[in-house]
Amino acid sequence: MDKTPLTRKIEKTISPMAETMGYEIVRVLMVGIGSGKPTLQIMAERPDGTMNLDDCSRLSQAVSAILDVENVMDEAYYLEVSSPGIDRPLTRLKDFDRYKGLEARVEIEPGIDGRKKFKGRLLGVEKDVAVSLKTEEGDVYSLPFEHIQKAKLTLNDELLKAAQQKKG
Image 1 (cartoon, rainbow, N blue to C red):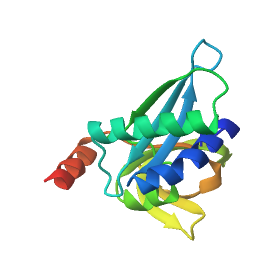
Image 2 (cartoon, rainbow, N blue to C red):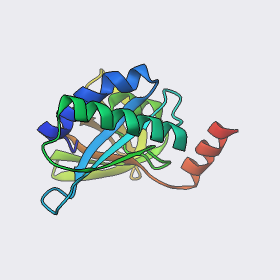
Image 3 (cartoon, rainbow, N blue to C red):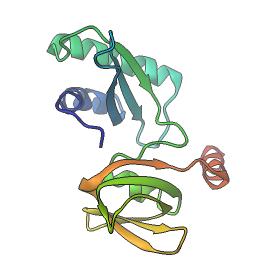
């Protein structure tokens, strides 16, 4: 899922520090490579799914410091730390269980029966290796987690309602 050797190294470097601060790393992504100064995007959250501006600022300062000390980056970069947002990416197996019952879009490689893109309701995780999803047509697919290239919750009224209930 969008992981390169560099983003894996960055995630491995910053995750223990983030966890001691009370955060979980959701995604590490490098964008704009080869176009001047790249941007390192880090999505994080607290175990309860929250992440406010102060949290982003604290984590940003800590990430910047550890990446400088560990000399992980060879070139200058911009750093962005954010929350996953309401229509968040699903990057960890536990995300698929946590958001069971909600609608998501999932892309896999290689495909199943020639199909690579799926949209449907998350049914959860199967034996810690696959994600179960029921499409709008009523078909149920078992998508191997290792084949998932991209997955994201679908922004719809149901997701907005679930987010409001979580707040209230």
